[in-house]
Amino acid sequence: MSAAFKFRCLITPLLQRQGLAIGAWPGSTRRSWNVLVVSTTPKQTVLYVKESNTQRKFWGLTRNQVDRLEAADVRWFAVLLTKSDSGYLLSGGQVLRRIDQGLFELSHDGDYKINESPDLAGGHHFGSLDELAHRTL
Image 1 (cartoon, rainbow, N blue to C red):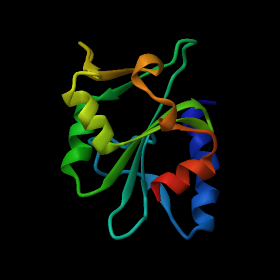
Image 2: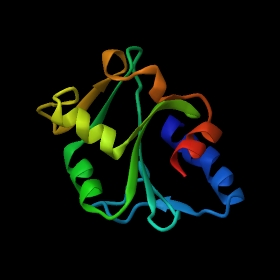
Image 3: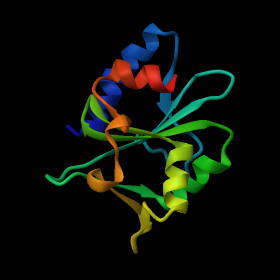
């Protein structure tokens, strides 16, 4: 079972207790359970969830997906999992600034590559889903 699937299973009841619904974001060209929409108001919140399956932690954010998120009228965050309930959190604005600065480089496969070290700071780390919810909702 993937960390992204476990993340979804764990965060759903937490959000439901807060009166929020969660589902696959319909703004993607194909339904992806890695891009989740939370029913926040006045704007929906989208969580772009990626996991790293390697010893040396790195993630890829697909350029087309980042472009679609930026064009949509939503608040969005990149959730970079190290485990199903912890990892790193960046706002859409933080992701775009790092892309503009050349810190998140576009690779030949169409993904912006993010390395745990040196690309992510301790302040971006979240240690629990409660902490993630508090920072995003």
